Amino acid sequence: MKILVTGANGQLGSEIKGLAELYSNLEFVFAGRSELDICNKANVFEFVSKNQIDGIINCAAYTAVDKAETHYKAAELVNATAVGNLVSVAEEQNLKLIHISTDCVFDGNGHIPYVEDFEVSPIGVYGKTKRFGEEYVLNSESESIIIRTSWLYSIFGHNFMKTMLLLGNQRDEIGVVFDQVGTPTYARDLAQTCLGILSRKEKINGKGKLYHYSNEGAVSWYDFSKAIMEMGKVDCRVNPIETKDYPTLARRPAYSVMDKSKIKDDFGIEIPYWRDSLKECILRLKSKG
Ligand SMILES: NC(=O)c1ccc[n+]([C@@H]2O[C@H](COP(=O)([O-])OP(=O)(O)OC[C@H]3O[C@@H](n4cnc5c(N)ncnc54)[C@H](OP(=O)(O)O)[C@@H]3O)[C@@H](O)[C@H]2O)c1
Image 1 (tube, rainbow, N blue to C red):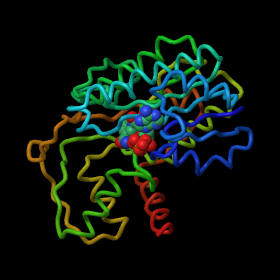
Image 2 (image 1 turned 120 degrees about the vertical axis):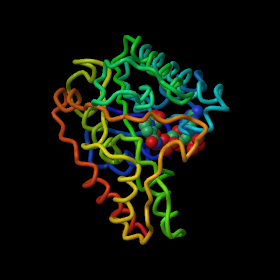
Image 3 (image 1 turned 120 degrees about the horizontal axis):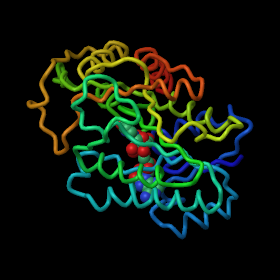
Image 4 (image 1 turned 90 degrees about the horizontal axis):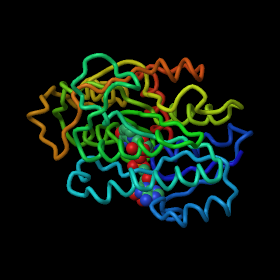
């Protein structure tokens, strides 16, 4: 089976690239934005036909959460309209599709882990546009699933872990919010999950379309940051602050922990604890230099 990975130079796309050779039953075509802009429907159809694609993992997205507040059209084009393009090609050419979405479809007012059918109510442009993207997949006849994830980090790209390590090396102390709780996700773990699902012989949507995936556990950004400094051996004091003292353009959900029972049960996967994955990622980052 030949898999197209869109947005291939982002965090998740890069982690999939790094794992690809371990999946000998899958062939890959990696396309960054310059090889394939998913907003261009004609190009998407042409690219898929020319490369004889059987499945797509959509890692492309407009992920600048704050910038999205003032760039609605740009965010909507990538996070929603372009997902419609991928769904159309998947329907017409009988492709499998894994689309990645976000915990930001929830408003964050919950206090127990969200199951897949918990009511969505995004509070920002990023979450709203990602929800519109989900709707294309949910309404599609194609063999497609959505995996919602949260707080993604990796040795590649830009993310909270790398920002903390950078700031920690520049400053003596830093304030991080303790009143937003969620679960970090090591992009390599999510990449493994996507590839494992596509490697199976069964239909990928045999039991449903929506799944949640993050690492195990729940933590505040403050606690996550403390662990990053400790594991990264960075001597920087982390002070707990409240969200009201760290204003951002886009509001963030206060509680965004997701229930992962469904993906574990349906696909028989085990999910690593967030601290174990963070440790592995920081070791990899250090060995990369
Ligand atoms: N990052 C998080 O914390 C987080 C949390 C929850 C869910 N997610 C979801 O997880 C998925 C993967 O996220 P990520 O962190 O790996 O994202 P990322 O690192 O920001 O990568 C996204 C990639 O998509 C590319 N892209 C943007 N517009 C495109 C277009 N029109 N056509 C083709 N490629 C395009 C970007 O290219 P350029 O660099 O050229 O723009 C970038 O390489 C996304 O669906 C995201 O919404 C992320």
